[in-house]
Image (cartoon, rainbow, N blue to C red; front, side, top):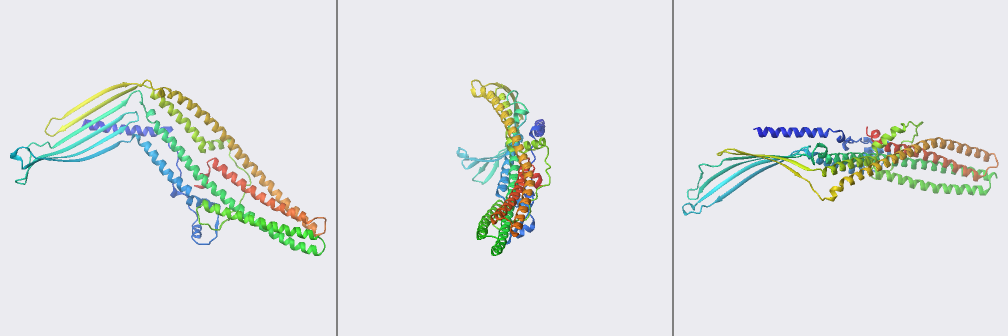
Length: 515
């Protein structure tokens, strides 16, 4: 009974130590992302329209994002990969969990005695055995093994003549064996830190996997936002070209009247007709771009090819409310996968250095074992043994150089981390500068559009009154207005995309879309 109580105490102690190890600050797991079932769903009205054939699908920006999260195959692959990553982490975390090996056995033996008097008899013995073994590795480096085996034995004689079975008078009915052993390193491989190195590595890998997964989902969201705006851009360009084409046709009719009145030459009329042909050519190109934009969005959202319509107009912000640069740097470092790789490389190098130093230590191991036998008809017996083993390997050059290699690897990892930090700082400055510059360009492009429209209207009034304004000037002014409108549209979309990409760089995308 004392032996069993000791085993229970050791098991409880090991589990307590495991809990303490899991609570160490460096081993805290990073926050994971929402499950696939908890991702936001698209509007039911949109789902209904998708089920109808040949139906135009009006989409808001949020609809495009949620459809991508719901249907995109890359998102599904990322979630499947998370299942594998979590399973690998569970394997690493189970290093201090006990393993149990139950065993059942049944042995049947029969023999015929050699003498003539009993040649018609059969001697039988039947053994039913049950056993279990428990192995446990402790955070201190100790290995603990506990085993128990029990067996019942029936022996007897079966007579063929009388078809009867007679058990022996003094059968060995019950036998039990209990064994316990523990091996504890005292120098090499001793201590919680050394015995949790692989667990720490697994946790570092898991933190990278989680951030990589979050970035994958954020990238899908960003791609869907940018692709939606590309569709919106193609639609707005088509409207601009259609308005320009319709306006040119009206101007052609007016030019015919002016030609009849002798206010313009035939060459002016031909220039107007040539301009209409060019605008019609541009219209075909813009329609092709629209078709390609629709195809890109349907591919990203994994939808059947339908007429998708972006109905949410691009609204640039009235002002910029960016966080201070120091806050953005902190966000960028916390959410940049390359930076986390560099940080983890430094941590792994430190772990490898500790492991290399450990391999050069003397190997001193304490071994304890105890066995207990119990028989139903004999006296119980027990045995105890202990040993202290000291060893050291010499002549292994790779082991001798391991510390030097690990120290060099650590310095290289630290230099790489510094370079990565500098690169992220520079990338962030470039992205912030792009956001600020594009915001300024929006204001300037609006002014350019207004001035181009005023210039065109003024020229049209002058040509009506017979002033010295040619049709070529009017056509150039019309083209200038179309270019100004397209420029304003492009700058607006570019600014919004720069903001979206900055949010992704700072790790704000998931918090914005997965509330």
